[in-house]
Amino acid sequence: MIMALLPVDQVLLIFSILMGFSLSIPLAEMLGVDKRTSKYISIAGLVIALATVLISPPSGSVSIISGFLSNVDAISYPIAIAILLGGIIGIVSLPVEATDSAHPYLSMILMGVLASIMLVMARDPVAIIASWTLLSVTTFAAVALARDRESLEASVRYSIVGAIASQLLIIGVAFSTPYMFPAVLAQQQSLLYVVGLIAIAFTMIAIGFKLGAAPSHSWVPDVYGKASPYVVSVISGSLKLGVVGLAVYVLSYLGPISPGMLSVVIFMSVASMLIGSILPLTQTNAQRILAYSSIAHMGFIFIGLSVLAVSHDNPHAYRLALLGVVFHTLAYALGKSGVFAALNYIRRYSGGLELDVIRSSTAKDPKLTFSLSVHLLNLIGVPPLPGFWGKLFLFMAAAQNLRGLYIGQIPWLVILGIAASVISVYYYLN
Picture (tube, rainbow, N blue to C red):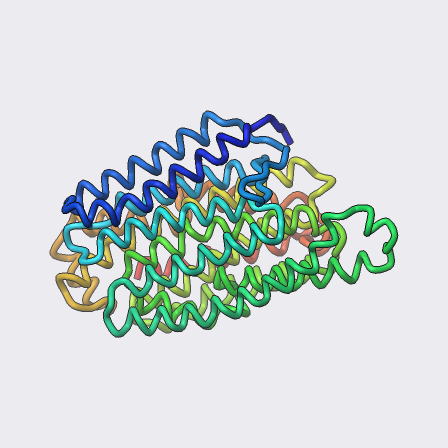
């Protein structure tokens, strides 16, 4: 991996920009600034932060910011860029004039982007837990901002799941702490495997809960199916990238000491693709269908994570997997933002999101039909749309004849991923 230096003041500048713009939105509301202007201010903040990241090359050195360790390397750098791009997409797609809580939404998105970037850059236990907590609180609040019964119920469910995930993460991070002290490990080699297995197991289970990957997926249809479509588009897309980045880091650095975890990651991938591809076939509500499809997309991302866990001696496969994970998540965020923006429009004017209501609405509006079709085709992975390239990189990485991803000469995980994509064509275009 190519490394360069990133001065600590530039890392601090990125965090400060996002924090400052996030706090400026409530102030703008107090001063009577209209929603549209606040939207432009939010976009400007993300663009400035993105420009700061782009002109700052990745670094392999660890920076100390307010006592927290942050590392901008070849893993966190592209993911941070993708998070910022996803945040820009999310805000651009927000119909502020039709949103009662536009100012809080904008502030929460900026704070969520900050938390996601902090999480993907965090390299010590306290920084990881603090970033995770900030991201959790931000998303819980964003879900509840609509203030209707369904959104409040979804927020409570989401909070309960988040609390469970946070407890699991704390246990996992606590057991990973010894790996930051090589001298201790040198004297306790017999404990290396056991401690590493516990650390990676609890951390990956927590990540599975947070991402909504099977078998920790049961909350996804209830939360994503009841919350505001716009909020779901953001929390299920770009804000998940920070958690995905943590998973990449864990499997990249702790994966080699715990080979048995590959089976767990593959199981999560397979189960997510199967559940997320089959259960939507029985649904009649578009938002619940998209909730289940989110589970399937987590399965595709876990294909890339499986490759990262076993490709330490294959740089080409590692780069393909990392590129696939980042690109697919960003393409997924773009597709979900567009689809949920369309659903938000339909629900506002038609009062429901049942499939027959959507068919009736799109039949009357060719522009809506075209926009919705393009974003759905992107989620399917039709070339030359971004979703195609994300899946292509993931499947190419999994086809590199790596341990556990082949049965004989058959790349079975790739075949299963393609089959899940084919099944998704039916419920996306239905």
